[in-house]
Image 1 (cartoon, rainbow, N blue to C red):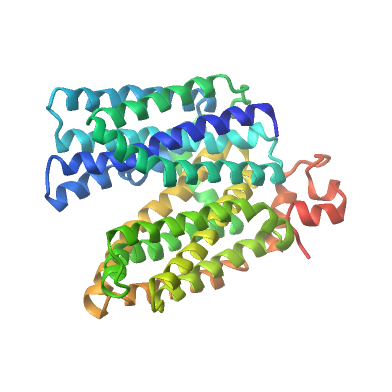
Image 2 (image 1 turned 90 degrees about the vertical axis):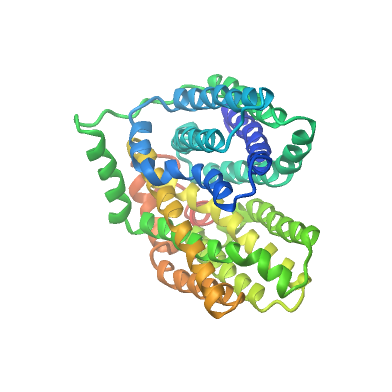
Length: 426
């Protein structure tokens, strides 16, 4: 791996720890101000709104800007932003509207940082599919460990010290991340396109996703998956309490089982892609997710439920390594920001649909029904996208993306080695 990757990994690991702190602290801070569920929901939802409102436009801007500069400026801005609610907490003037505004602006910063980082990584790693899988495995594993395990408990503990403390801790993490990103090697500026409006460029990026069979398959998976997973998440606490007899502490362990599986999935993703081929591996992980949710729906006790969630988490973790790596390897550099943000926006837009569906099905037909419906949806999606992201389709996309004579081009490498490292096509 290039030396610059270590710095990028360190920056994102530190930032993920800060994210985990804030993810726990913001809702708890809101809870000290109000018990109104709708007000709490506003704070939670505000962070997702930037993706829904202008995700594709943000990608178009990233494709115009220097990506390294975009990352460190976004992190610096988020660090400064967090000083505002921290000061308000010290002065005892914190409010729900202020927290919602901060969550929204943090979401804007996250949109630009995440999109720029996704677009920068292929340039750093020379668009090598094998390196991209290894890199995304390490990045995703660190993110899961920091934001899923270490960050939330740290956020709760720091909040007990003082209301401003977790916010200041996250601000420090953003500053450290920005300093590390500034030391990264410069990447080539995106090739200027013909002078077009931002809206037209955004539309071109979105249409590129829908015209490409592999990219469309990669985008459909998180979109349909979010409908299913949010349907489950909406009723999971109620299901655990009413059907499995799990108390609050046990529910936390249940979620930890899912996160543990996710960490395992990120670790085995590269090996899975090498053995099965990226296309077959993606189909397999999708089927595993659907079957695991089916097992959760039928779980007779907390142990089976925990195992099912761990297996589902492993499938999701592997998918979140393999799919972005493939996308980064086949999308032209000048479109990377728009393609990544389009896929992310589709997934974010699908989440509220899943939440509504889960609540309606549970109300009308019982608390297990959303879980069975989610399993059916995931398995149906697996069948639909299997041919779109097959080993044959992936191999063809990699050949089309690599210039002739490139050492990472499938036809320029040893065919046996290529079949295992690139796509595993059998």
